[in-house]
Image (cartoon, rainbow, N blue to C red; front, side, top):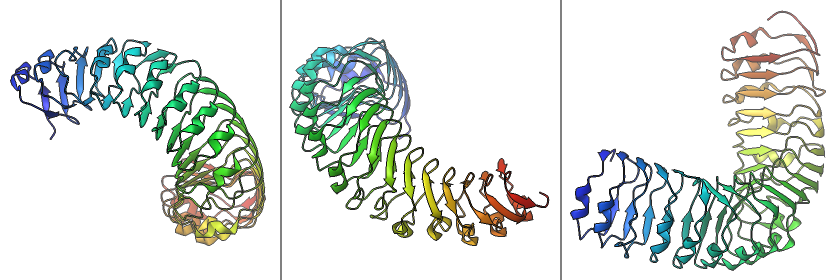
Length: 416
């Protein structure tokens, strides 16, 4: 509705009001304490505005409230610990504000009916209070982007209804608790950007309903469970910048509609995963900085929606297959720092969305095709340290958006 201005204190006169939805506007100013006079209120959404100041205590008279959403504002002051008195709450979202840094109030554990808890970016510090793990109706637990420390308590296994855990961007330490394996309905697990260590527990490996697994930016180690190769609903998988090792599960992606996968900067070895694009939905594939060897599998010829393809810094060999060159959706193709052979195919002209082409430090040869000059969106072109020969195609001069070009370490002639 694009409403602006302030919320008038006169709103407290609406004694019969049961639902107030002012979300996604440009409302400013403070939240009037008179709102607590709307004693029949069940649903209150003030999210995604520009509200400022401290959130007034609304708990005294709003016993009927089941949804409170004030997320994504500019609220400040103390975290509203009084929300723990709203015993009828089912949904609580107070995140993405600028509260004073402090510990998570244990009183939130009083909200036994709560199914969705959103405390992202609330400046919360200290350990996750045990009282939260008594909220056995919880389906969503989001305490991401805070300053939480300590480990993930074993008591998280009590939350048997959970389907989404968002604890990313904190300072959590220790290992993933085996009790996570009790959460048989878990669909989303994001603990990225912490200081977690150890291996993935065997109990977690048997969960079958995962859609999103984000473990990146930790110190996790060991292999990826082979059982995750059987997942049937997985869409996004990111474990980059850890210490994982061993061969990647042979069947990974064979039964799931993978949309994006990033396993970069680990120590994976063995053959390149064969089935990551088996569902033909893959848009993002990044395996940078591992030790995969052998050739790129021909199965990827059915992968027509790749936007980012980066296999930089492995020990891959063989001719670059034809499917690499004709990716019509590709914006970044990076096969640099490997041992690839073969030539750049004129089919590269089909990649009309391409912005970056990284081919340097391989064993590619032949002439640079003139068709490369048709890639009018191209900004970065790295061809150095190969065995290209012949004349530098003048068509490169047509690349008006090009900002970076490397040609050294070849046998090229001519002028630009």
